[in-house]
Image 1 (tube, rainbow, N blue to C red):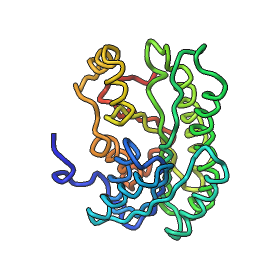
Image 2 (cartoon, rainbow, N blue to C red):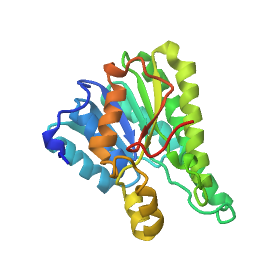
Image 3 (cartoon, rainbow, N blue to C red):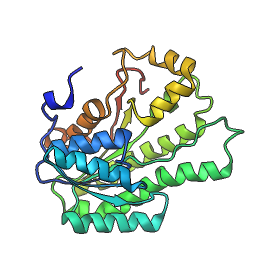
Length: 262
C-alpha cells in the first residue's frame, strides 16, 4: 500500500483553523496529520502532553503547523478553556473534530455506573460541550465543519460486550444529526464518521481477542484494516473541504465495506 509521502492530500484546506481532540495517537493522530497535510493550522488536544508534542513535531517536520493543548474532555471546565484557548491561538475556528473518548467495554452486568458515566461523559457529553462552546466561532467561519466520531459497533449482529460502547456512540450520531439540522442555517455542516482503523484499541483487540477479531476482520470486503491517516484522515479532510460543501447530517462508514447503515 502507498505511504503518506506518495499520495496527494485528499482536500485543500489552506488557512483553515482546526481543533482535533484525542490527537495524540490512533485515529485522532491520523486525522490531525491529514488535515495538516491539506493545509489546515491545528490545535491538537488530549490528556497526554508527550503524545501531543510528538504528533505536533511530526506535523511541523512535514511543513505543517500544529500546537499541543492538554485537555481532559471529561471535564467541562477544561473543555470550555480548550475551545477558548484554541480560538485565541488560531484567531478563530473553522473545523472541530471530536475524536477523544474513553470507551466502556463489557457485558451489561459488568459495566457499573462509574464506567457508564465515564463513557457518556467523555463521549456524547464532551461532544455536546465542544460543539456548543465552538458554535459562536463556527458561526463566524465561512467554512465551518464539525466531524464527530461514531462507531459501527451498534450495527454488529452480536453486540454482546459492546452494548454500552454502542450506546455512547449512537448518542454522538444523534447529536451530530441535530447539529446539522439546527445549525445549517448558520453555514455549519456536521457529519459523523464511523472508522475501522489500526488504532491502539484495534491492536489491543487483535492481541487480546484473536479469535473474535480475526472472525470480524474476515468480513471486511476490502480485506484489510484501514490506515488512520490515509483511509480515515484523508476522508475527514475531504468532508471538511469545499468539495463536500453540500454534505451534512450524514454518517459515513469508513470501514472497507464491513457494515451497512439500515
